[in-house]
Amino acid sequence: MRDFPSCFGESGVQVSDSSSGASRAAQNLVTCLYQARLLGRSCVINVSWSKNLMGQGLTVGIDDFANQCLCKLEIKPWLFSKRKGSKILEVENSKVVVFWDLSAAKFGPGPEPIEGFYIAVVFRLEMVLLLGDLTKEAYRKTNASPSPSNAVFIAKREHIYGKKVYSTKAQFCDNGQSHEVAIECDTIGLKDPYLEIRIDRKRVMQIKRLAWKFRGNQTILVDGLPVEVFWDVHSWLFGPSSGNAVFMFQTCLSAEKLLPWSASQNFREPQLQGLGFSLVLYAWKNE
Image (cartoon, rainbow, N blue to C red; front, side):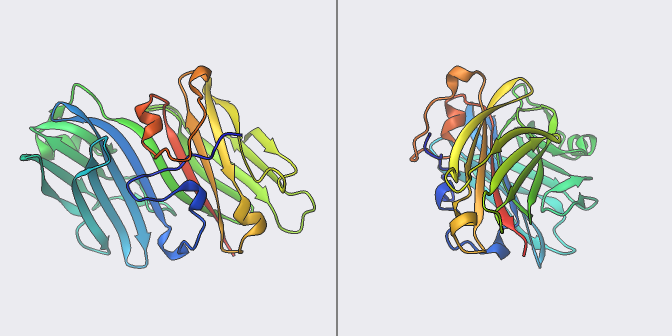
């Protein structure tokens, strides 16, 4: 079995350690990473959406591939303010402008908006990154032109909740089809707990004798591409009731690129090696 990969080097959170003492109140968070071009070289733009009793929050940061933060914008949780605006950030003596309009945004149960919004990162009147469905409004507001090299969606980390079934939506390649991902795991009162993963309601993986296979990995196919699935449900079986499980879906362009993992790898390394898209899910049980 391959070592379970670590993730999100910037925050220092390791996949294998994620269940230790984490506060559930702070876990309503989705973070997305995009590879883009800035100042003639590659960079990573991370966009984090959060939700708590104070409202919604947004953080936009730009890092280089050495994991050094170049600039960062944080919009703290709001109720009725800061839903629209812009901010100038400085990157190596150059100006990057972040525009956002969430005044008409519609949200589902999670912290990420569903529609009615845009987030735009502009450099020298060029649209480096554009998120949301209000594209015309974004271009009109920013006066920017499309970038010749589009930003690529390379990774996502999300916290999901449930009692027996844990669901989310995900696309396993940039501009790919959105799929419904369902993880079913019943560990209460069963002599033989099991784990089942479904993509678009079709079972693609089933693990029995979970007490002996609480960590592992298996390859499935999604859209004709191999996807390596890692799981760690140790906390659900042997830890406190407040513990969480961790699942990682790692796409590859070909089966030959599914190389062994090292636990010292950070979340960006698979993308730097051209291994495609990573989806990390932290699954929490609702009481």
